[in-house]
Length: 275
Length: 241
Image (cartoon, rainbow over all chains, first blue to last red; front, side, top):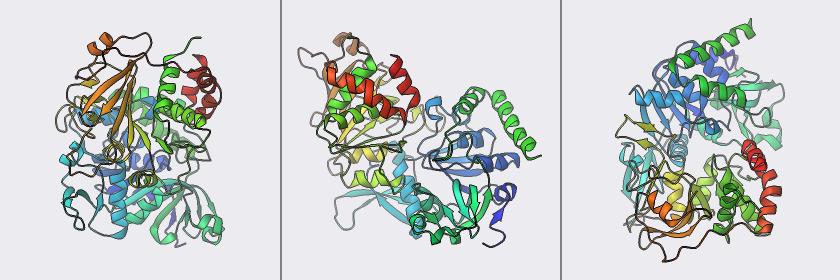
């Protein structure tokens, strides 16, 4: 792969400037938490965060740390551990611009993005307050069958897609398994940044059993090795979500002080580990 | 034999799913997931069940978008939605209370509801909490509407509302709920007191049937083991009850 593709976590996070439109993955797809820590460490600001199509602790931490100006998502919560406390607090304080979406509309907008067409029609949505609050969704009459109102959603091409995966090869290809929404993210985004558990010398595209579930190198801007890089979120077939840690976060993040203490420990732990 | 409320609800869901070919269950839905797995077992495994978050009970290979594409094509017969607020026209609110960006109460968000509610024929609204806080005259925010204008493409919609107190069916022609049964230990008066919208009911409202012996044996055995893969904490609580 080009030498710049493989890089350190710090260099990977440094590629994302303030104000970027950043697409992130849902918990079950592969969440780049180690890279998120680098973003918080270097105090990225004014992100427009696009959750594909929902998020949990990753979005909550980025919001709590003041990195996000606009959040577009179909859902933000800590799942079994309840509401996402910093997300809820930021909305209450008027510190966050929220764009409420619905999962298939996020995917559809990205699918339009991968084709670089301006919009894509999608069923449902008519009569919802989501539609009423979006100026990038409009109702048109079906041109092929008049009298059939249908919503069109504007395409989204994120500046960056960021996620964590199990395996990349040294040629810059990334294996995503069944988590094919990651392909949509990478195809739609201008640049894709990936952290991985492992980097192999073997070209993943030469293995026919795997090649169909690989994002090929032309889409991939940077790859950083980050073992357990999704922690405390899980990674399918590798490790489960660290329930005790998510519970600890959920309790701490109820107050701004508790959140600040949690983040300090989270950033500090990494420094010690790296030392 | 003692039957817990959770077991009663699982059995009620399984009955509502009878005859479905393919049932999908969304995130954070252990009781609907258990109900769907029970319905599958009772169908002699003729029914397909996709539990989001499960590895074993999930055959999607096209990522998160596949559920939505299947629903659009009519390949999903039943799905479950909830609501921080639900009103008498089956509108649901998953976003929050308050106007504009400054929300007094904020919930996680609409997830796939603004789409699936339109496309899946048998959407079961499931919310255990049955209070006037939840069952409101009119939702503050429409994540997804219960009914649509005649010209709107809408093969799907509300089918039933199951709560901790009773079971309602949704009458699409009247655009109202009709109380079908009251759970054992509860009364119609209790439901009236705790519901903020009007609904229809027969003169005499039946009691929600308890799970029969076979259902109960499956819930406490196979289904508990099967759902533990996706919801270990729920399965542990089910065993302890």
